Length: 306
Ligand SMILES: [Zn+2]
Image (cartoon, rainbow, N blue to C red):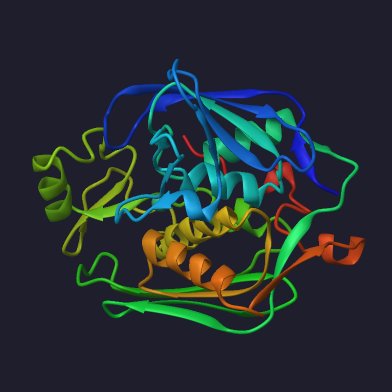
């Protein structure tokens, strides 16, 4: 069955890039609706932005969705991951600015907010996308691939020069609440040198040591260090789940990311849906639905962070 939220839930924070305060409210939506953003600060013109891959702009730092009227919402990946990881298929996300609040740089506050309100089953089967044959995109030594599988599996490998991150790889089956338990509290990370370069270009103005793990060589500058020894690769997997959710429904397949980022995963979805015979929509029977992310999620297993 499809799910929506039982009641609305509001998050207040700042945008990572603007540093401006933002209020975002997730509201229930009807079966078949999917996930939509609504910019409540836009009085004239089209304020509605569907969370679909072909609305995404190619930006290196985050995923930004733009509608036909040029109205956008940025940094959607962490809330999209939380909704997908909690098995929420339909929601209206009202937001009073151009950027989703960054909170602690992970998805865990979103997951806790969603699960505290509860998820409401709806009387319609879930529409999933089954991968039928491998599709790959490559760019600048990075690669993203989808191959057939009867559930969503995310496999990721990164290799950073900074010794604090280095080479990390991980593979997780997204069944049974894996996202919330294993990935949801892993934060955005960046290199100190990149922070300085971004801020001198007017980016990441809301970035602090509290909403990103900042590393410099072998040193972790953020207080408390990493939440997991491999928090960096876990965060890349979190981002991948959020970016894959822009397919418009859960994916039944294995995603393999090698140094991939938002724009490459988006290019992968574009190629997938443009390749004849690579993917087909399926209405999930109960057996397939039981393998979707969000099924079997237990409140006590969601990480608690300060
Ligand atoms: Zn991220």
